[in-house]
Image (cartoon, each protein chain N blue to C red):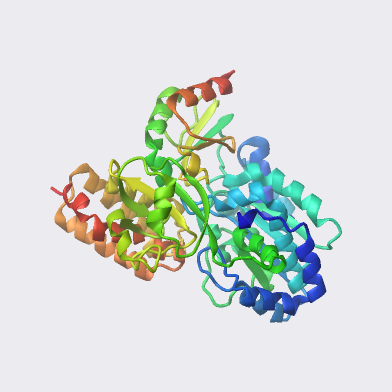
Length: 368
Length: 136
Ligand code: SF4
Ligand code: FES
């Protein structure tokens, strides 16, 4: 696997020889993009922070991977933490930051010692301090402005953008925020001539015999990927995490140029395989429940809407709902999608809107 | 670098299992953040309880992959075994039982955290064994 290749501080050495501007040029030329889901060019992001005027700048490594079905960051921390830390040091070198943070999700507390040991081993006399801040169970803190709030000791509420963290971030200073997969790719992209920008880590789970992390190129055929994962029964649907929406397995072949079709979002390549024995309504309930729990409560459509979605789905499941309830549910889902403040709320009903498009029957069967 | 509130609160939970009123007052003095502000932060996060917890805190994942692997049944089983409902702490303060969002063990579902440590590929038998170990 490319992501497991070690760079042994040689990339940092090379970066220091080249200087900040050239490092950014390499990242741009090699086409490294953010792996957290938004796919923003990493070189460009760093350039904004490099050009921002300030004597204090920060680097934050976003290790708050929380999208249900995703475990690639855990995989990297366990298997190649040295290269990750080197990536952070390179980011710090480029923008001349003295302080970096790793915001490690609370669910990964058991990885903290390993990370700390690696920091102690790798950082040494680099003049950069890398501090681990442990999260405490809040999915929303994967959003970059919420991470900043959380490190600053506030409730993890997302903020309106602009200003962007690149120029006005942690403690009001220019800040680079990248996730683990991105930062681990940085030294590899700098050092290896054969580094491939198209490889992605894909987290596969669900009703399959071979769940795990797969490293494959963008555009890899989803049906082939599912075959590799060895479904236990006939596959009914694929969920792209909670936020990406779902699609019927039978429709996959119809969208050859995109892994997930136009209705779904691929995000960070989270793939949950659901087979015929599962009920889409139950899955919808599980996901709705997740959003209800994780909504940060700052804006009304998401805070109240996610609760109402849960109630309506429960009503449908109990057999007491009417056709009108289903219409209200669909309307509400659309409203939450369109009017929520941050990505969490906006995408919280993708699963429902796609399920209602492709598996409507399973909902209608339950109506009274 | 100043002390980070989140870190202080996490440390307190690690030490005592929860953030007591006393602890809040102490941290308030130390950081100059009003008591209400500290409660505001603590209550935002799932893993910063402000009430006394059991000696063993269980968080069962109910996100889709674990739900597909029957984690909801496991919760019912745990409720019966521990004689408490989800979200409660046993009277003898031995166990607290919660659900949690995905803990990143989806390839080894169903999974739960016991005192922060992941336990994977759970079955009822496995849970029984784990509980027995906690009690002894
Ligand atoms: S959309 Fe949800 S998570 Fe985002 S700010 Fe609004 S309430 Fe918070
Ligand atoms: S869905 Fe349970 S650990 Fe990820």
